Every structure is written in C-alpha cells, then in structure tokens.
Length: 406
Image (cartoon, rainbow, N blue to C red; front, side, top):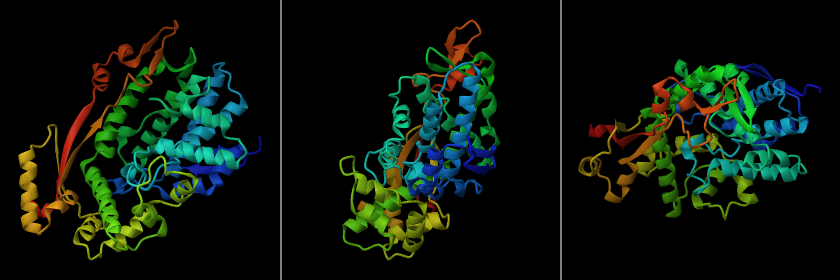
C-alpha cells in the first residue's frame, strides 16, 4: 500500500501511516487538538523535559500496534487488513477524550464522565462523519468484537497504551527506571484460547515492566510536587466556577467560560457539547491562569500565581491518614494569619490520598504461556516475590497548606 505519511518520532524513529482512513483521522481537528493536551499534566514543574503531548503518545501507540500485528501474524494468528486498520484506529483514538492537562482535570469540566467514555463519543461522532468506517474499531474499543485478544491489545495490563506511555514518559522526564524493552515484550506476545498471552521467554521483561510501573508512579506520576500542582489547578477551576456562578465575569476564552457556567453530566453531553469540548485545551486554561493571577479575588490570584510562578503550597505525605485535630489546627492558623473566611479554607488547606497498584491480577491478568501450552498468571509463574508484593494496593495520604504557615 502506498505510504501516506511518515512521522519522525524520537522514541521509535520513523512511524509510517499507510491507511487513508487513519491519515484522515489524524488530520481531523478533533485529533489535532491532542497537540495541545499535555501527556503528563503539570509534571514539567518537577521534570522540565516533560512537555510532550497526547499527540506524541497516540502516534507511538499506533507504531506499537503495527508491530504487535506483525508479530502475531508471524505466529500464524490470522488478522485481516480490515481488523488491522480497526486496531490501529482504536488505539489511535483511545485518548482523544482527554481534557486539558489530561488526568489532572478529568472531572473538572464534565461531571462523572471518564475520558474513555468521551473518547467513545468522539469515535461515534467521527464514525457518522466518515460513513461508518469506524464501526469495527468501535466494537474492538468497547470489547464487543468476538476476538477478545484484540480488545486486550487496546486495553489491558499489557496493552500498547501502557507500553508506550511508560517508555515515552521515562524518556521525556529523564527517569531511567521507567525505560522498558517494548520490542522484547511485543515479540513475546501470542494468542491462546483467544486471549493475549506472553511467552515464557518474556517473563523477565514483564517483571521489569511491572517494576517500571511502580517506579514511574511513585517517582513521576505521583511525585508530591506534581500532586500539589494538580490539586491547586483543580482548586483554581473550582474557585473560578464559584465566582462565575456568583456573577463575576472572569476574563477567559469563550469555550472555557461556557464550561465554568455549567455542570455538564452524561445527559447534557450531547453533540453540541462534544464539539465545544473539542475546542477546549491546555492553552485555554493556562492563558486564563495568567490573566487571573492579577485578579481582585485574593484567593483566585494566589492560586493562579502558585502555578504560573511555581510558588506551590506545602505538601506533607504520610503512610497514615492525618489526624483531624492536626488539620483543624492548620486551618485555624491559616484563618488567623491570612485573614481568610472559614468557608474559603477549602481552597487553601485540603487533604486526600493517592494509591498505586502496579499489577492487578483481577483485571486482565498478564498470562504466561509455557512451551507445553500451560498458562499461568505472572504472579504464580514468577520466581520473584516482589511481583506478588506489587499486586498489593499502596495508599499514601497528603495534606496541602500555604507555605508561609510553616
């Protein structure tokens, strides 16, 4: 098939797009918006190189999906050209539903709607626009296609999404512990009983993959500075929405203003709202933060300056929940020192928790295939006790408050 487009990727080199449909989707404004959506939110405040976007990530995923299809075909797993194109479309579109700053603001604009559901809405809208050409991709994405392993290539514990974001985020952040051998892992993929499995020869690469997930979550994704930066960003939008509903006219893009005025849930999220959401990106939010950093509302301006000038609040981390008395003491000191109303303290002092489970054996387990055809969960197959330990949920608690209280 004639080459349509070649992208030069710093991770994999040249990525070739051969499908006219895939190329049309990449050129679509819905997809081009991903160039303006950060892959790692505000992690660049911790790791200055982490400025890559969702656009980089999904192109990398398509490259890995092409590699996976070639690998499985070499092992006599029949995958038609139509199925291959649908797999590439499904992985290409899997993150199109992310809002500004990715996970940081996932529920700040749409009420209780996850980005996966928004991605599906985008795919369905594009399917109507492209006369049903995305039908098979949507079935695979939803897990309704009869070949189960295809959905696992898109969404599982060893899918192309995870393989790319670990390697890519490791590269751009400079955290070497997340660098995994994706080529080895994909080469070891196989299909048994219509399920995606990993040949035994790849077990150590899979162990390294699980360990890399643990390192990247605690060292990068859940880094304490990244946590407090994202929480401040959420608080900014909460304050902006509260002021807007009280009648304050905040200067910002019309798109952002529309989302500040209305809580949009599943019932309200129609095609009109979808199109409006497609025009919302990091630029809307960051330009608003710069404007609001000089606003008359002291709380809004304080929060915006925290992000814009990286003057972030203090964050304490603990393996145990913070005592209620300790939190109340900090709130009392904050009210006295900063002359803030009690009802406004939620914007300045707040606590919560984060958790990580590097491997979840109950959700699309990584299955190891032995030469004799036997199948085992990687926890059972591994001779490393650490893999079993990594299937445990680890929770950490945080408390944020202004630094001048220290």
